[in-house]
Amino acid sequence: MRFMPWLLSGLLLAPLCHADPVPEGKMKVAFLYNFGLLTEWPASTGSTLRLCVLSQDPFAESMNDIDGQEVNGRKLQIVRLSSTTEVKACQILYLGEAETPRVKSILNTLNDAPVLTVSDDANLAKSGIMISMFMTNRRLVFNVNTNPVKRSGLTLSSRLLRLAKNVD
Image (tube, rainbow, N blue to C red; front, side, top):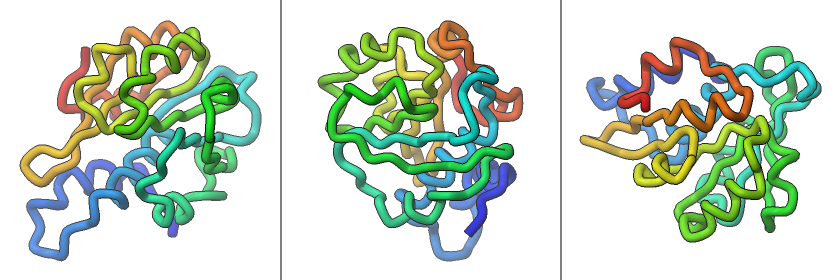
């Protein structure tokens, strides 16, 4: 199954349709994939885009659907981490709810490395997480915290910023 950039905007409108709702885990994975499509990393990043999941992986099956897909000419590789020692080797780092107490420590380890940090805890944006996804009115939405994005040397597409609920 191949995701397209337009899927992100389509998923934002999905609750308005009368079709069966898309499970939350599949929506989050589609968002993660599209965040990769709509982010630009420094040229030195390499030919593989590593999407890392730290600790619990609540949507492992959906993650497997995007493993190996192409993202802007790069192969997407899903990596499940058991510790924070490898976070700098990621290009996208998804931090689930279980990681909330360790966010400050994880961000200190990254130290402005070009790693797009994403969480599903809306309150973590103030902690330095770049993108936080959350459900509101049966819709998955996201906020973008641009300060850590700029410090890391990443560039987010204007399309991604327009789709965000809030951009700080």
